[in-house]
Image (cartoon, rainbow, N blue to C red; front, side, top):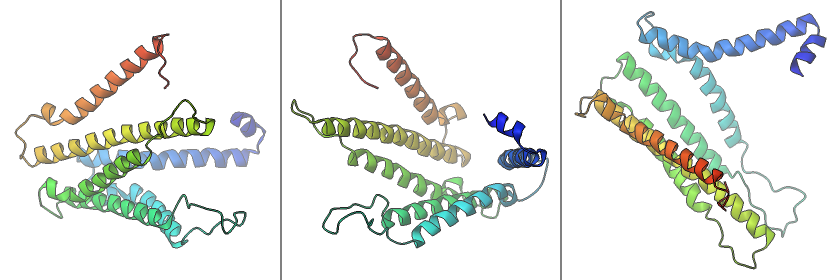
Length: 239
């Protein structure tokens, strides 16, 4: 359908579309290309410049978070009565917390560049402290979401609404559980890499990558179990 629209469009409009597509692809490839060139010593520029395409993206996202916070509390919709209960699904406190998380994310990127450039010379474990704080908060957020979405107990007289709520919260719990496992594996893996880079871990690199091996193996086992259960016609488990 997109191709049909392009075929019917004016050649100038088609040219603009293709130019925009190539510009976006070029922007997306700018960081990995600069990273590879700098890592191979093909170019000699500061790592802050290597991360420049990401800084632009981070700035846009930061402005969006900031505008979301500055918009203030969400007003109560006009179609809801004054005595009717209403819960803000995106409260100001949540938006402020999200902004704080993103600022932490930017800070550890900046500290990483400073460490790579030699501007700071502390151990990698110390230099990556903002990252560890950021990911620890992510892990806490996922665990909080998991326990906050405890499915209700169903009885023989459960209503359709209760059954739908049970299914929805079960799926949300599963998403929080899977994400928390990934964040935990990532956090421990970065810690092991930092310790190994500082020569504070006496293992070889194969052993230092143990968290990613365990996480990948758990995914493989989970996938095999899922396929086995799905292939069993007598299985009553829903996925």
